[in-house]
Amino acid sequence: MKPMTEFQDAFGRALLDHIEGRGGDEIIERDDGYIALSAPAAKYFEAPAGTDRDALDRAVGRVLDIGAGAGRAALYLADGGHEVVAIDISPLAVQVMRSRGVEDARVLGIRDIDRRELGRFDTIVMLGNNFGLLGTHGRARRLLRRFARMTNDNAVIIAETRDPYDTIDPFHLAYHEQNRQRGRMAGQLRLRARHQVLKTPWFDYLFVSRPELAEILVGTGWRVAETIDTDGPQFTVILEKHR
Image (cartoon, rainbow, N blue to C red; front, side, top):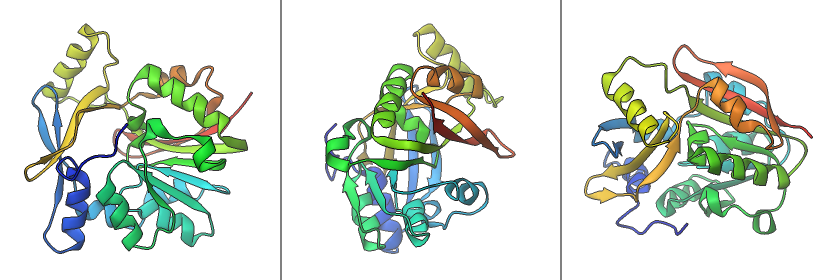
């Protein structure tokens, strides 16, 4: 997957606008026309706290932070003594990370992760709902198997997702049904991020329930070791390697 051009990098521009004092929000557009504020850009600069901090404290050894954004998790882990490689497909997000002190920040998409280029890891981090970056059922299984090959024994994945069924919003429920009719998982979204006149390319983003997650993991070399719940639909899982 090619890195985004300056006209596509809506997410990174929102981050850069925030640190340069111009404000900035991440707007998400779904392929059914639904548009919503995903998060204020300031959210991506907050130090991990609560369940995020609890989850990150499970990290061991060398860490790969996928979809690292402004580097909040990477900086927290580096401060804790971990060697961290932080990746994001947004060139401007990587620029922001480097300006904030992330030593090894690279422009790289999740589907382009390669052990020959990055080496081996003990922990893979996908906070901020970034389990969703796996995209689809089939791609999630393929990438999880790849992660198993590029991690050491006793490695863990720290991943946050959202139960798509924990909603009464009629627009979301209608989208679930539309997905089922198209042969997709109910929580498989087709999205793009927007900021001012900038728009990212369309991409797949996957929300899963706990049973769906367990089914995806079968045969990938990973299993759920622990679940960290919140008061809402978000939850974080600690996945461990197994034979």
